[in-house]
Amino acid sequence: MTPGSLDTAVGRIEVHRGGTGGPAPLVYLHSAQGEVPGMPLLEQLAATRAVVAPLFPGFGASEGLEHIDDIEDAAFHLLDVLDRLDVTTCDVVGMSLGGWMAAELAVRWPDRVRRMVLVNPVGLYVQGAPITEIFGRPLDELADELFADPGHPVAAFMHAMAAAEADLSQVPFELVRPMLQAMAATAKIGWNPYLHDPKLPGRLPRIGAPTLVVHAVRDGIVPRAHAEAYASAIPDARLTDLDGAAHLAAVERPDEVAALVVEHLGH
Image 1 (cartoon, one colour):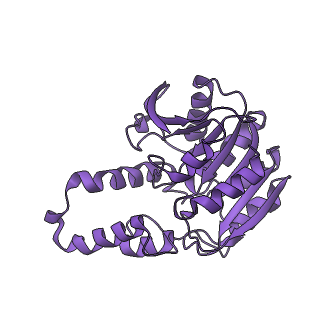
Image 2: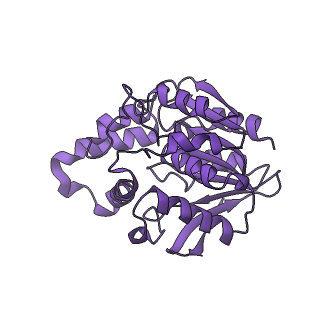
């Protein structure tokens, strides 16, 4: 995957591209962690097909967050990105926040999405199954909900950062800035209502793309009931459970997620 940029209606954004071929370009929409740069999953997928991974405004070097007020703005921004990339029809893979954006894209412009994979998607409110709070949480607590394996390098880094909070003068600001920017950008979309769109459930039957909903069994952020709600409301959807992974399953278990994506989307 090669980093580059794209001029959009809200400003210049960071876009990673790789691979060629496939039945349609695969567009990857990232989570609130902005995990695109150096992501093994994308490298694997790009070995057999064209992959495009835009970073949402506020993440990485992407500009324009000041023009995004809610999920409606986010959906139209994604449409603008597809238009400027000359992507008329695509496969979409979205994780967490990216899964929510993928669904919002597919309900508005169903003809633009050929097939779709949603990994631990947020975006819905399910009575009795609240999404765990992510804003303002201690990093070590959050790491335990994002990763099944506390030894994963990102989880270990989060634990180390939490330990260093006792003496913030020892933490270079450049080290924490991407994390703070990612949380600020996520809050712009999902602060209130918290990580969901009240209108989305009624619109899900508009999705025409065959959809795979992946629920990681150790997910500490999004209960399984949300994956069930997506799978039951989207006309051609099925749900699968992924063992040994938590909320950031595409980061923690790239081989397994890549296999599920390829099986569902084809090469």
